[in-house]
Picture (tube, rainbow, N blue to C red):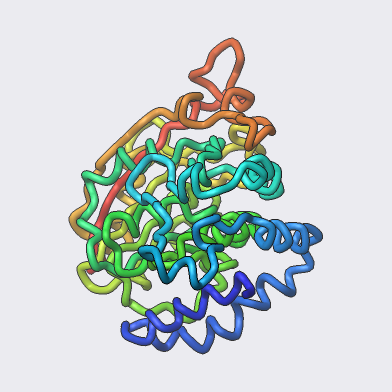
Length: 342
């Protein structure tokens, strides 16, 4: 079965929501965005998904299964690492080959994940961000949730674990979509899907989502105000925006505009103070704005690992003064705010 068939269940779910008008546009765009991407690694990734092992319990013969209780793969969407199966679900050869197969999807940046006892220690400890924001946002139970720029979908799985009726992510980087599909090969029931494009690839906005997340996106936008308006267009009246972005200290109204690079990132445009960020959101007519967390990013939260072997935060900071980036700007500090759509 093609991994793209997982999107069929998305269309079935959308049929019973205010997002039903999205079904035909998504049917027409999701598969081409993957299969016609001209990404030279696509065949390797699809082959690796096919090579992921079948748990030994589920490969038992029909006759054997008839004599036993049906096998349910153990999983957890509420633990720090998204849990997929247990070590005893694989035989010795499968367990030995699994790390090499999962290495085909490196670099793993957002996570962590655990496949049958193989722990994927991702660059970001995304669970730490989740723990910081969860108590400050509205209960996700039975909500339609949109996560813009979701990466591998780690937070979408956590949203489903918190009871979301739909956790729909978007990300234009095909590798991250492949990482999602690797997880989805086993976790077929949770209402989680990652679409293979950014917000620009979504169908025309419908004010249907109860919660919209934008985390780590705003500073990459040339027009942060336009992005805030875009996000609002997807929220139902009274729906909640959860916004996370890099901030700096400074006077009210100040925003840092890096010269060329910020922490070795080229596509960083505006880094506001917390007060300026709140003012931007207010100017876009959101209400009930709350700052729920401000935290300095640490090398315990973002670092190189065996699953992401390239440079990471330690390499982006001034080695003689870790309060500054390598370019001399204030080191990354991130704020999370919530706001309500009018």
